[in-house]
Structures are given as structure tokens and as C-alpha cells.
Length: 383
Image (cartoon, rainbow, N blue to C red):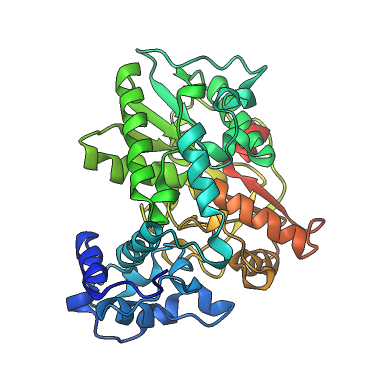
């Protein structure tokens, strides 16, 4: 087993991925100053970029798997180095050699589930629409306005099924013409791509695109920022372009147009957590906040790190499937920040963030002090 990837292979992968570390990085270290890992342990993106530049990266080391692709370092880099692309390039090499070290060993099992059942849990794809039982949610048919694409976690995770149900209920209340694909739906492929498995990503993407086209899909409404990012920014690589809308954007539109009427007050202090792939990567900051501001009685307070500077929950880049030591979870810090501003509810708009934050509030024994909610769950309660 090779532990150090060949020099030429590293350079070729980095170039092919669009990374520019080979020619642009001058080792200023600004990436390290903003990396969320340095809130909980010692980690150097600068060092990894240097090693990639000179073909010295040891693909068995845990470090190449730590990047959560939060987007903070490329945002601040004065030389426009594509750190995320470079890390994904290194992971492609590791995947090629079958090296999944330490906490990312589950990636192999995840890949198998995605290939056989179209989801990372390896759950029966025939049960993908089980969350919608009793809600009169229709199968998508050509001519419908929206395909609602809940994504893997909302279809299979017990906590997040509640978010899918809340979303369907709100859409029905507003009279939205929508349907779901059920067992025809595959994972969007975003996270497996970030782990370096380009082959599985392309397979999922092509299957989804074919299904969308064959079904006559024009507009896709999503709950996950990761699905949003992939459909909007990565599926066009396959010459497939659909109108992609995140649920937080659409809630704002529905309320503004008077299609959703808020009838109840919500007498709670709430803070909003910006998911990396909704905010920093795609610039959606205002709509979820404006939705919350329109709810009478709700007091919205900001977290210390918000909008472009939002603290990553730690689940991006495929880390949602890896085991992170309890004392190294960014979400622990986020829960403490929410408690620090006096919030009783920490609201977000991403299934990965909910998963991380729910786990942290329980591990940190804050279950009685704060609740974690998706923005759609709050809207459901007030209409």
C-alpha cells in the first residue's frame, strides 16, 4: 500500500480539479486563521496545500479528510487558491487507492449504499416516500409546477422526516402544485463527490438528470442546501439546467404574495444559523431571516458568527458520515453561542446542520435549555 501519492499524480489531480495551489499559494497562512478546525484542535490547511504543491501528501493521514468544504478559506484567500478543489483532488487519489483511514472508514459502506439503493443509509429505495404516508402527497407528473426533492436525510432519518412532513403541509396549505419522485429519487451526490468519489457522483447525477427530464421536471424545490448547490452549480456540467429553489426562499415568496397567512404569534427568542452551503456558498442570507421577522412575537437575535462569517456545523465535505470526536465538534460551539445570546430555539435550514446541532445539545446536556428547528417547522406552527 502506497502511503505517499506519486508527485505527478498529485499535481495532475490538483490541476484537473481546477486547483491553483501549484502556482498561486504563497503560504501566508490566512486559511489557517479562519479554519473552524482551529477552534477545537490544531489543523493546517496551509501545510496541506504546500504538500500538494510538492507532491508530498500522505493519503493515509486523517488530515486530508478533515476539510468540511465550509468555504471560509477560499473566501479569505488573497491569491484565490481553490483549497476545496485541492482537497477533493487529494481525496480522489485516496479513493483510487482504497485508502479510508480513521474516522472516514464508513465512506466505503456509504458508497455501497449510494450505488445499490441511491441513499447513504443503504435503506430500501422503495421506502423513500414513506415519510409522506397519510399526507396526500402526489407522485410528480409532467405539468406540475414543482418537484419537491426532500433529499436522503428527510426521507430516512426519523428526526428529519418531521421536516419533510412540515414542508409538505406548508406547501399544501399554500395551494402549491407539487409532487415527489419517491423511489425514483436518488441522492444528489454532493457529499460523495466531496469525499473524492467522482465515479459514484457522476452515476447518481446522470440517473437523476435522466429521471428529471423523463418526468418533465422544470422547477425543483429542495430542503437541503447541499442538494441546492449540486443541482444549481454542478449538474450544469452535464448540460442540465433546472430552476432550483430552496425552501427558505420559497417560504419568503409565499408569505410576501399572501399565499401563506401567519395566524399565530410565536413568543420565543430565536437565533438563526446560516448553513455554509446556503449562505457562504450560494448567498442566501436574507430570505430565511425575513421569514422569521414576519412572525409576530418572535424575537430574532444574531449569533456572534453569522452570514458570511457563519461557523460551520462540521458536517460538510462528507463529514456527516464520519465519526468526529465529541470534543472536536464545531456544533458544540454553535449551541453554546446560541445559549449565550439567550435563544430558546436555534433555527436553521439544512438537514446536516440539524443533525449536528441536535447531537450537540444532547451530548452537552442542553436538551432542556434549547431546541433545534428547521425554519419550515416554525412556519408550520404559525399558519
